[in-house]
Length: 249
Image (cartoon, rainbow, N blue to C red):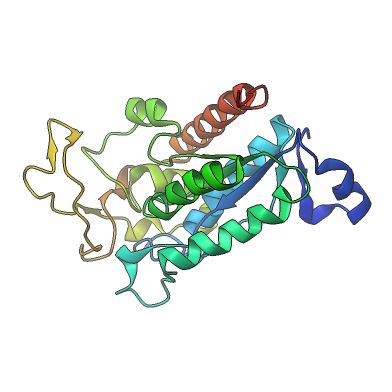
């Protein structure tokens, strides 16, 4: 294992690893958010942890414990789905990063397992760059492994509890998936917001399908999940190889 989980090492070892050449990785994955009737509430947490684990195996990041709560406004109507206000998330994650900035760390990677979480995290990344001169890279869960996902998934579109996400959970822990409750449901798309597959206008909405998914979860398989998860990790490691040598001139 090339990387290190900070939760697993004593203070003297942590002190050695925290310096100006360190890349600190903070995974964010919702631990309590609805994912339909067939997937666990912690699906985002499970997927993010799996990808983080593959990254730690292959690259010398210092990995922080996964943050299981963040900005998930689309799911507030579902019992048990936790949503934290965007401004609170920004301040909280900023304090986490500053705990390392004060000891010389200049590079961070937020492994973001959410979609709406991109909104506050992009603002934070910009603020950290402008106010503190540190680089905070932010992964995009809709882009990681996308080429592989497009090649192997059969659903016309998706985005939540769908073929891709269900496949990932079948690969990670199929005991947590009830495929007898997998369904095909799609969120409506307002005309003009997406044209020929291209996003034209951002239009906020809440999850409104009957079981709270968007896509075709019935098409999911263990094999698809393994390929998607591996592709996601590959994309992050490829970026880190460039990031480690980056100099802000």
